Length: 246
Image (cartoon, rainbow, N blue to C red; front, side):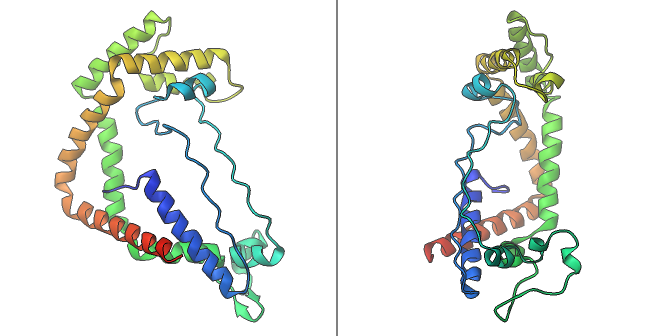
């Protein structure tokens, strides 16, 4: 309710692409909305690495996103699509752009479509509350007795596999696993990590603990969050209407 799912983001982005296309059409230019690449599976690392296939193939690295080939754009399309950004550094100080006698939005059709669609649904105060709750609940959850207990079980499981980590976040943040070439050792460690999470039900226990904490925090800011949630739903509804009429 207070944040968007991957599916929600796809609906919103697709609607913004349609608005961009319509803006380009106003200038007599074609624009084919691009499709989002398929989202990588289980990329939410809030509770550490949890996807076994990803661990076996990429270790702790984020799997590469599938590239979506962009249709080649002409200079005119680039100019109208990106506006002043198409001019490079210092573009914001340049005079307004035109195309065939029509003024181009400073942000270009893309920026104008995105900003214009999002602006009515912005709620800075509500977003700050949601962000604060997300951050504080995560930090607090790591001190919860149930989470500390499952960390110990996970750590014990890892020791049985010859790895010494106090928490799953320690493994995820190992310096050698953050940079340089992906090694066989990293992949083996990641696989052991996920296996121990599965054996101990760590993600589920951690999620339940944090959810309980969040519910208590939400009660103190329910008015702001209800307003934010309402705007999210209105934004999604508007996006779906745009797609339905495309």
